[in-house]
Length: 325
Image 1 (tube, rainbow, N blue to C red):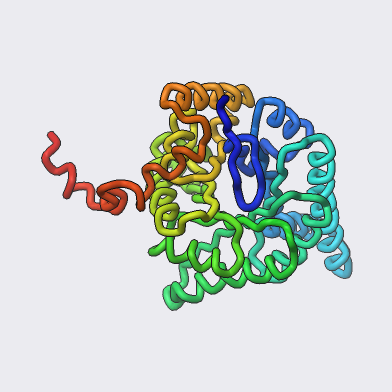
Image 2 (tube, rainbow, N blue to C red):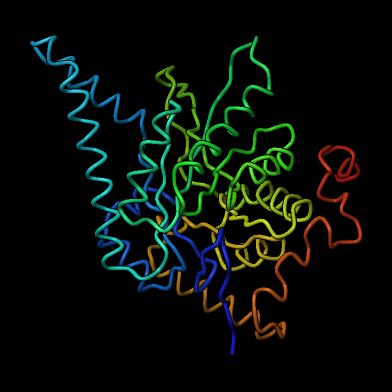
């Protein structure tokens, strides 16, 4: 009997497949569909503080009453938050798998206020989708790291449900950041969030949006850092995200040390059917490899468990492939 059960940030999941935060997970009805398809957990679409404020600004531009500014801002904020809380409540009412809320804020107090309301709405855990792009020449790395630490510390002081930090891959020392986040209360980490990618249209000579979906080519960085963090910080919950498109990618992430994997672009492309397909193939691979549970092979190829961990640290392309014609 194959056991796909996994532990993630204090939660017990029936399998490691998580539907990542996106427009896919904004509806209770669709979330129920993902549960039926076999998903182990669902991360709801992020509540974006910046998006709320942008909507408020748009409404204020068309208002003829300047004195209504505060009312409009508060109305939009309250309405958006209430809608999000309703999605949590309805999804929890129809689904039995863990439901993880997600927020993205840029003001310190907003993280705390949103987190408290989300816990009260019944979410099983909270994913903090943190992305701060620092372009200030005078800004230093320590202050950026301190901001991340301050966020996790304050949120953990406010709520009791598990809190997971979702970070980007553009840090000079990812294991050190993850380690300090763990020390300050993080229950798990997501490697990585996918940023907006700009592109340039050479016909219109304008800045446009790049491809919003990930590809198999994105998996390399995810595997590298999953393996390194897993080896450096044993026992800490890691969710591999970005570049996970099929059952082979799932197994690779688990071998690297992930507790769970998050799928998003693949579900957009293939629909919820891919979830059951992936699970079936994972079970078949485990049977062939004579594994009864995920714990028997999780982290088998992480940084601490391979003979040559330096392979994960290789970064200079020409040094290793200069002989290829």
